[in-house]
Length: 95
Image: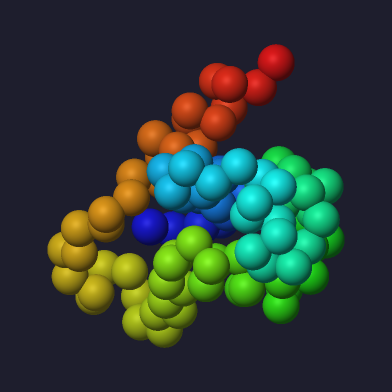
């Protein structure tokens, strides 16, 4: 999966949190942040502290993989998560 924006990352975090049946308060407590921080990250707040974002990804079991070779040479890896579907769903659910 390719994450291009903080909004994309927020959608992934929100989707995984919901799949794990965690509410925002429980998730915030697990990673040591406020519920407001979780809300902001899930909405793509671009100024979230990187260390806390990495802690959140770890708590959700999301693996971060930085590839250095061009995308076409990596082969046909099948992603377990369809980022386009998650982002589309997040955009549709906004008022």
